[in-house]
Length: 68
Image 1 (cartoon, rainbow, N blue to C red):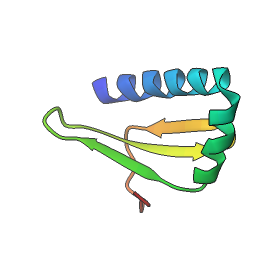
Image 2: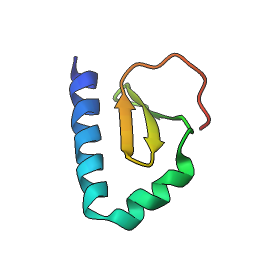
Image 3: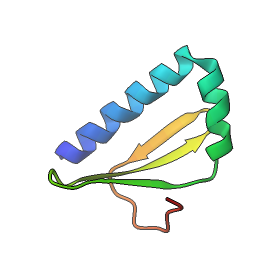
Image 4: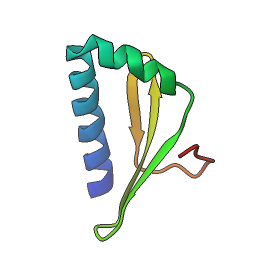
């Protein structure tokens, strides 16, 4: 439950920040189609990022293949 709350909040903050900085949002398009997994050891917090030209989707649970 905490992991889902964290990922929802993180996604909102990231996308709000990107809307305030259009060059960063445009640069993010280079990562479109990539799947980025982040694992924070010690606090057992894991999430996966899906960037595209509109922003970033953050999931707390993803079992598929990742690029990074």
